[in-house]
Amino acid sequence: MPRPLRILVAKPGLDGHDRGAKIIARALRDAGLEVIYTGLHQTPEMIVEAALQEDVDAIGLSILSGAHMVQFPTVLDLLRAGGATDVVVFGGGILPDEDIRELEQQGVAKIFTPGASTQDIIEWVRSNIIPRH
Image 1: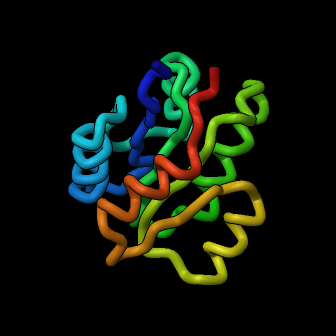
Image 2: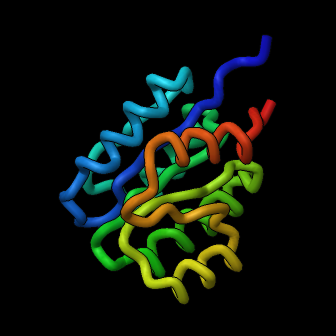
């Protein structure tokens, strides 16, 4: 039997609003996934280092600060630099549609916006992320 998916949930930057991230982390855990929640005020370097150390299959970023056009690309760049291009990056927050399109072109797999249900997120994760090993 394959191991459960391992997802790292992170709050990059100075954004102190973590209720949504905690709800998603708990929902994913309750759905049988292994979840590592890094807590508030993480730098992209801290997030990628934790992802590599924990051997995760995906990183879910929660960003409400407006810094998404810096934080997401930096995480993607650091994953590439670390040879972990197979780690899927997805996230959620309040992002303009044009920014979502740009981030997806850069390699972010999916952005969930307000109103996405935890069930929709769980189903997307199960359908789009495979164990790396």
